[in-house]
Length: 166
Image 1 (cartoon, rainbow, N blue to C red):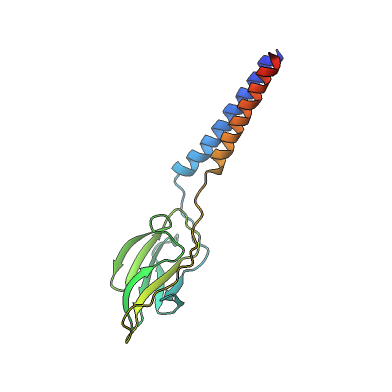
Image 2: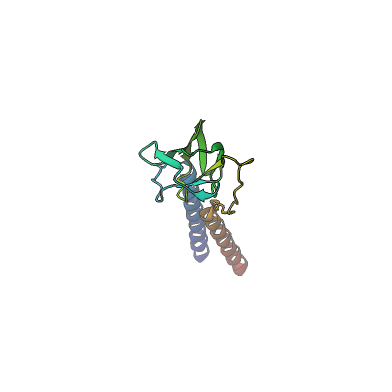
């Protein structure tokens, strides 16, 4: 009787942990989540220096679509968003003249820094900026890993019980 009871408890433990892990992983991947407003206002820069020559405007209520416009005198060569990865943290919706519109992705809640690369009057080339190397930490699937470890532990306990009884 003890053998049947311990096997049933171990099987129930393994199944419960597997279901919890799978539910957590699939909920994170499949559930549509309403984006939350970023907590920090964007930082605007020109050639890596904080500047008022770049303005921003939120295009939606959630503050996930932002239009940046360069209003200075130099010639705009392009835009960069230090610390953000295009396709993971943001996507470019449109770029027109001295403006660019981006959409924040995946509930991005880090700092949004818009850096206008500008060739100043009298300069022969645009100044380069130094990237800070910050990267967003990937989603690691910690819940799935915990479930797999617990599944392995349950299997080990079951195997030990079988050996002990033989």
